[in-house]
Image 1 (cartoon, one colour):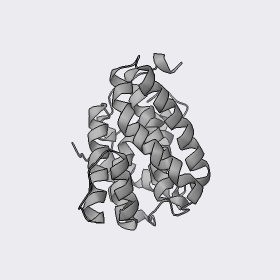
Image 2 (cartoon, one colour):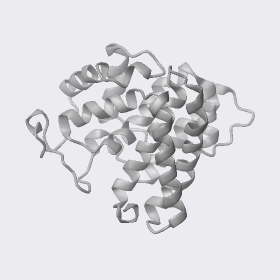
Image 3 (cartoon, rainbow, N blue to C red):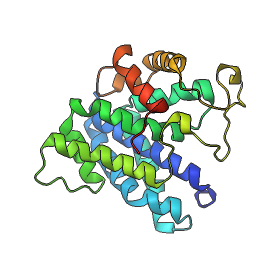
Length: 231
């Protein structure tokens, strides 16, 4: 089944896996049995997602990504999630966008938001993603994790923000039951910032987020995800 998945959905689902692993690794739940598998998943995604997207019949890459998906679910099942998923759920509520696509766009923004809570854990993430952090301070090493995530995102064709979302395979934008709430194109105006931020605050994933989440703190993160760019 996985061999037939289109390139764009392969990339989006791969970032869903990365979100499933990275969120419990820095979650305030800090569930020890989840940490090892979460870190291994991050390593597997960094090593295999590009090949899985661009070499769709590469058995080894697909095999590794399937195990990464399985292990990531084990990690977040007990270790919790955070506002990558909360933002994704909010965007989907209004625009019926693909969950993995949403996670891919939200992930670097949320990593940057959460960095100050645990630079050491993000240093581990950077190393798992193949970054050489020897000799760097924890702060500088943590920044390498963010850079690696942005580079991976760009390499596999993730849009730079929600408003740049193109037509993609099996898109449901503007077709769902609640299409009147949004439409077939993400607007990204202040109304969107407000309603998505408020929706995010009430999401079940938010309490596990590494950093405390308030409306004033998260609204700029949402705004950047809607219209900003790291590219």
